[in-house]
Image 1 (spheres, protein in one colour):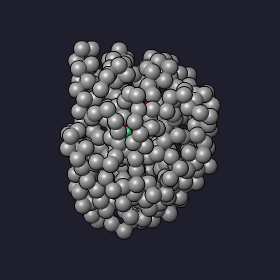
Image 2 (cartoon, helix red, strand yellow):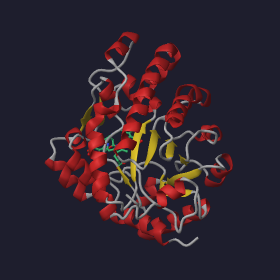
Image 3 (cartoon, helix red, strand yellow):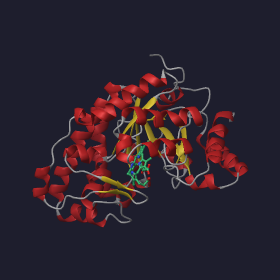
Image 4 (tube, protein in one colour):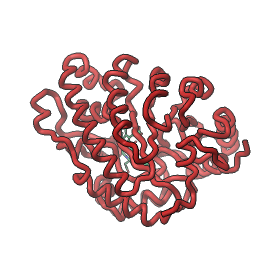
Length: 340
Ligand SMILES: Cc1c2[nH]c(c1CCC(=O)O)Cc1[nH]c(c(CCC(=O)O)c1C)Cc1[nH]c(c(CCC(=O)O)c1C)Cc1[nH]c(c(C)c1CCC(=O)O)C2
């Protein structure tokens, strides 16, 4: 199937595009009343994720309603620990919680390396979405980076410091590497399955990159992301390591096409450090709380700083749930109208 709009893929590969492509992390979700309506028909978040027809519907909503240049499959990074044997629950308004967590080497015996087929519901949702998109825009597959997944499996829930996960790196480095290796192998299987099912490009989310120092980040995170990147060569790859400003130079030699920036990272400095990469980002999601005029001018400032090529417009992290749809549309339209 020939894509009618392949701006994202061309920008990812570093090719010239007529304009900058745009999508938003967390574009499918609570900001849209249409999402909340579908969500109410499912028992809970996980039921929605595991229902390919409903997951397809909410994946395509932002393409229809917001006019973004890509769809990202509706799922969660935490499906991987679940497939490995560690169930998660999504508590309303609180976020993910693991009833059991990994605390010792013997807990690893309860886990296995996941095969793609254990996440068949995501693969089915990808295949159905691909069909229903009918080539309108590319479909993004994704997974969490091993370090971020590890953090949830050890901590059992979100945390400001993830000090239990970090403690494990200091006190049980061998166990840590063993678990990171299992997550990495599972993630490679899963991403390969996603690509076979129809993902045109993949993104790796390292949401908790910024809580490690440079040396630990290299040893316990970048090494594993690199292994994933080296194993996946079928489609372009985006790596988004939130808060890892210190790792940008190292990331320039990683086998990926695109590096995501958060809003703390200076654009010109990032261009210098990551010269060969396409960059994605990086408007502060809080900029969308400003007036429409402010949203437009902040977006234009960002586009000017990135320049006319090798850029995919996005936020510096996921959309916040209380963002007004008007402001999101204004961000997207401002990118589409911009003349470099
Ligand atoms: C850390 C992380 C998670 N999940 C994800 C990350 C990495 C990205 C990031 O750093 O934001 C990734 C994710 N989660 C979800 C998507 C779907 C696609 C999209 O981006 O639109 C994606 C790409 C759906 C979701 N995942 C979740 C929701 C909200 C659930 C609901 O419908 O009530 C959605 C739409 C729940 C979730 N899932 C997670 C948390 C911490 C929470 C609760 C807080 C929050 O909502 O942000 C774990």
